[in-house]
Image (cartoon, rainbow, N blue to C red; front, side, top):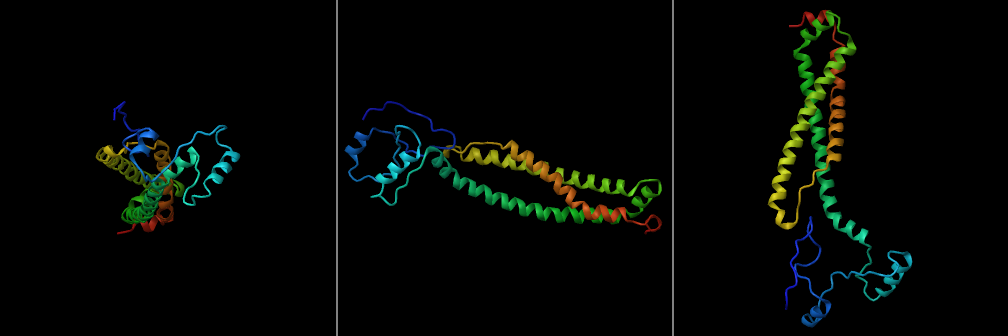
Length: 212
C-alpha cells in the first residue's frame, strides 16, 4: 500500500480508526467485516422523507439505526455528560455539608463575640446592621472557599488533561459555569448566615455586656 498522508486527530479524539483506506482496498482485505458505522451524504440533506427511506432500507438490520450528524454528536457527548452530572451531584452534596460548617462557625463566632456585639449595639449599631455584618462575614467565608475550590479544581484539571492528552482529552475551562458557581456561592453564604445573623441581632444589650 502507498501512504498518501498523515493527519492529527481533532480535539477530543476521533470516532474513526487510526488508519483510513478506500472501500475497495478494505473489501479486498477483509472478507467478513463488522460495520460499525456508514456515513452517507444524501440528496436533499436531513429531511423526514430521507430518514424514512433510510429506515426502510435498514428493516433487515434490526440492530442498526439512523442518526443525523447532530444526533451522532449528542450520542458521543452522552457518556461525558453523565460523568459531569455525577460530579455536579457530588458537588451539591459537598455544598450542603459546607453550609452546615459555615453555620456552625458563625454560631460559635456570635457566641464568642457576645460582649463585642453588645458593645456595638450600645454605641448605636442597629439590628439590621448586625445582621448585615454577619451576612458579609458568611459571604466572605464562602467566597474564600469557592475561590480555593476553583483554583484547586483548575490545577487538577490541567494535570489530568496533560496526563490524558495522548487520548485526545483537552483542557476547556467553562467560564460561564464558573460564573454561575460564584453567584451560587454568594447565595449559599447568605443562606448560611440567616440563623446566626438573626441570633446576633436579637441579643439583649445589657445581658450581652454583662456576659462572661
